[in-house]
Length: 215
Ligand SMILES: Cc1cc2nc3c(=O)[nH]c(=O)nc-3n(C[C@H](O)[C@H](O)[C@H](O)COP(=O)(O)O)c2cc1C
Image 1 (cartoon, rainbow, N blue to C red):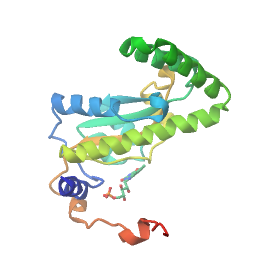
Image 2 (cartoon, protein in one colour):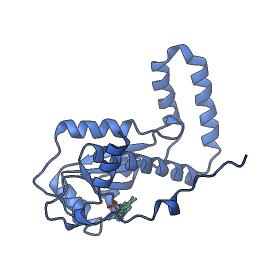
Image 3 (cartoon, helix red, strand yellow):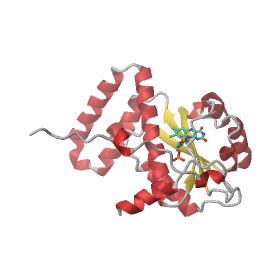
Image 4 (cartoon, rainbow, N blue to C red):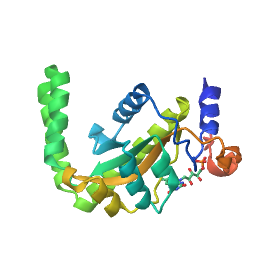
C-alpha cells in the first residue's frame, strides 16, 4: 500500500509539455471535483472554489496571463484554485445551515458553534482572513496533485501567473474570488524530456527529524 502511493508520487512530476490531443474523461473530472470538495479545511469552512476551464480561447488567454507557460494553454483541463476574498458572516451561516441539515439533533450545539466562529472571525483583520483563506487553497492544490498522481493524471502546479489578469479573464471578482494557483491537468507529451529527470530532493535526514524522547 505505502509502496504504491510512493511510486505514484515518484511517477508524478511538474509537466512542462502536455499532449494536447489526450483529454480527461467526464468521470475523471467528476472525481477531481469530488476530491477537491473532500479537501479538509480550517474549521471545515471551505473558503475555496474550483473553476474548471476547457475552452481553448480561455486557456490561451490564461497562458498569456501566466508568463506564456505552455502547460496552461495545452492541458486537457485547467483547474483554477481560488479563495474567497471577503469571507465572513454569511459564509459561516451557510456552513451552519449545511451542518444543521445533516445533524438536526445537534441544533443548539451547532448554532452555538456558528456564533463562536462569527465572533472569532469578526475580531480578525481582513488581511488575516485573506491569508487564512489562501492557505486553504494550497491544501486543495496538494490534495489534487496527489489524487491526480494516484489516478495517473498528469499535472503541473503553477504559481507563476498574474492574479489580476487571471481574475479579469475569468471574471473572478464578480464571484468574490481570487486565484491562488493554477493546476493544468491532462497527459504528458511523449517528448516532454522532463519526465526522465531524476527527482531533485534533499536527503531525507536533512528534511525530517524524529525527536527521540529522553527517558
Ligand atoms: C506552489 C507551486 C508553484 C509552482 N509554480 C510553477 C510554475 O509557475 N511553473 C512551473 O513550471 N512549475 C511550477 N511549480 C513546480 C515546481 O517547480 C516543482 O513542483 C518542483 O520543482 C518539484 O519538481 P516535481 O514537481 O517535478 O517533483 C510550482 C510548484 C508549486 C508547489
